[in-house]
Length: 165
Ligand code: FES
Ligand code: FES
Image (cartoon, rainbow, N blue to C red; front, side):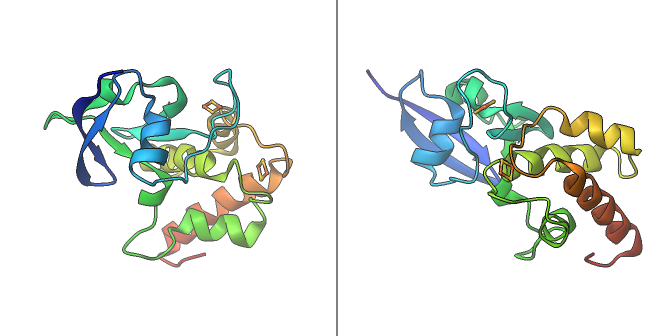
């Protein structure tokens, strides 16, 4: 299939790429940009392992055509899990996941990170119910979720205290 030139803005950097128009954003991130944090965990749009942020909103990269989300100066900025760390250091939520056992095999973790980042960016003090509701869009087959809720609460506390958990 004929390739077309597109421009994507990912984690604050612009990239010009020649890709097939039917290529999914998830595959473009992983194969063309080497950003392999985002995962494919299902084939029916149900797991959230591929979640990235598009202008701050969690989206399933396995359902999006990369060519449809070119940066246009006014938006379409993509953030992946590789863009969550702050100034080269783990963000509070990343450290809290490690400390509280929010991650076991880790396959689902990048998707959860993006969902939590969006939640806390928009609502820095969510209730337990709001945390559970937000994370319900992502599936984990290992942890049982309790540790993740605790990790999110620990990250919120760390942000409030200005410490890193
Ligand atoms: S890979 Fe499962 S929702 Fe995208
Ligand atoms: S930590 Fe293994 S699927 Fe979530």
